[in-house]
Length: 128
Image 1 (cartoon, rainbow, N blue to C red):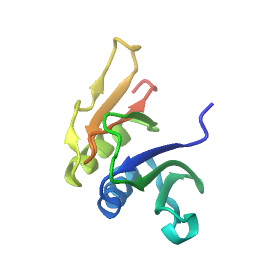
Image 2 (cartoon, rainbow, N blue to C red):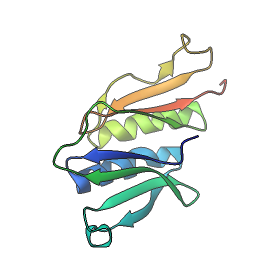
Image 3 (cartoon, helix red, strand yellow):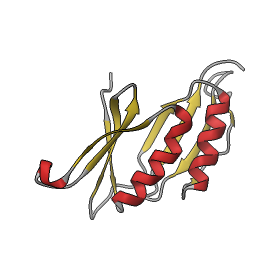
Image 4 (tube, rainbow, N blue to C red):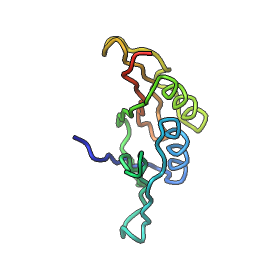
């Protein structure tokens, strides 16, 4: 159903670095950047897989805090690596990697808060 999602961030370059590093274990990367000159407003960075940007960030003076975004991980090791990379690059713990059986028996996820307080989750639905 979703094509892409956008987050407003308070520091574009800092957030671009954070998402570049945190999303790498999920096989996602910076796919596209659009300059403020091109938009007539502000710059945007699009992250995704296979050349398609699905998660966008853009700087604003009034970021919205507390958005929850869940990203698919191919396996549990990728969830663990996402969590470690996110914490190493400025994210804050919001739920260490582990099973969340209250969702379903194989729901393995980790949660971090980005620098603007958005809850970013990596989740794997596969058994071991």
